[in-house]
Length: 346
Image 1 (cartoon, helix red, strand yellow):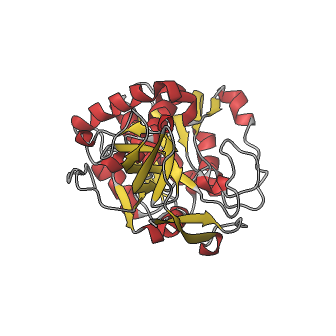
Image 2 (image 1 turned 90 degrees about the vertical axis):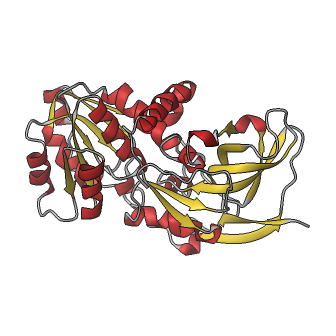
Image 3 (image 1 turned 120 degrees about the horizontal axis):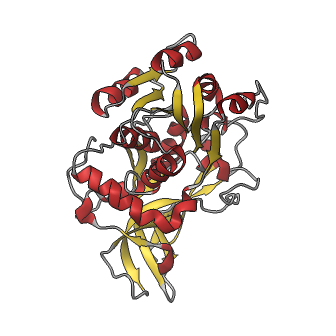
């Protein structure tokens, strides 16, 4: 009997998750049914939004059930196929289980072309984070040349792409991050005009004002909390705020109420809009085509923070809330012989 391993949700966390919330189990490897595909996981994604799926509460993503396998973005290799669309050896991506092997319906998978670059990018710059950055910035932020664009969590998988795309649009770009190493990467390698290390300033409001002397025209918010409070007074007339994430609040047991900031929007007539990448499902290919073109032209750079070993998947996830990663956080579950050895900016 062939076996595989799965990570299951052992319990729902209160506050910040811990290792006690995860359970590693060995089970019989599944067999694909009609129209299904057996996939060997090569890379597994971990993302901040997963914290919401650990709660027993309605959200835009369905909560995980206690005692059941969790789900994640996966890039893997087809081992067996009962679907005409795929054959063994194909590289695919989709939302599968936190598992070394998983079965999926063919219509839940998308083909990954290894010739475009490392297959891991299908979970990062050429996957959900890249598409999120592309449409959140262009459709909601709508930067124009000369605008000041501020990006929180700018050294993350989404934020780092947002800032570079804004620069390609002719904007002045300011990022926030939690270490000198990250801010140096933003300014020295990615071309940000300024970056603020929020852990090293006594007055975040003054630091943001100094970095944005002409105010803020576009704010791409991945964080919320004190960073957003510091940006809010700097919003210019008719500025745009794209609310992508609120990681500063994901582990909060009580969401703080104030101070209230909406009065600023009356004066500035700013527009604040939240969004989900699923809003752009029909335009996914358009974003990937543009992003891949920028990468080939060496105009868009990325990093991947890879944690080796399926048994270390919870460590990779928990590391998101400690700010360990620069760029996309991934778990390498298995080797893939056909992968490219060249990784832009890694």
